[in-house]
Each structure stands twice: as structure tokens, then as C-alpha cells.
Length: 97
Image (cartoon, rainbow, N blue to C red):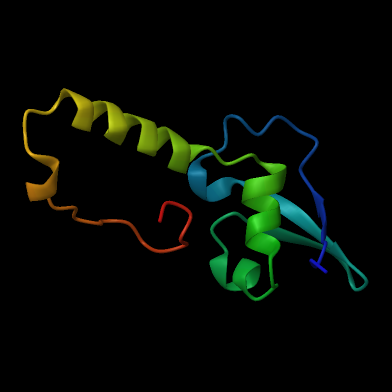
């Protein structure tokens, strides 16, 4: 059975936050803890929290959007696809892989 966490987003408008300022609250028996989206050490220390937060709650779409752009670009290419190579510049949460 998947571990479920109580996640609460701030009530105020957060659209003007910089990327490093975005956060959520993790509600546990010890209380409410403010966690920034880039606090990976905290997020990854809780099994399945990353997936619940980004996939389920925030409906993270970047992997599918990047895949669509790549597919379109390759369709426009005159190169033989079997001769192309991929250079992966990303860090690894595995969402794109």
C-alpha cells in the first residue's frame, strides 16, 4: 500500500515566487513543517513523497512536454535517427527517463 502524506499548499498567491521560494506544508503528527520544493534531502527522506507531490498533486507535465518537443524536432530532421546520439544534461529524479 502506498504511503500517503498530508500536503497543504500556501493559501496566498504564489505565482510571483521565485523558483527557490516555492514551498508546501507537510503535516505530520509532530506538526506542520514548511518544505521548499528544492529541499530534496527532506522530500526524498519520505518514501513516495516526491511522486505524490509532483506527479499527483502538482500534475507535473515537463517530461511529456519535452518528449513532444523532441518528437516534433526529430520528425523535422533529415538525419538518420539511428545515427543520432543523446547527451543527458539533467540531474536524475528519473521522471524524464
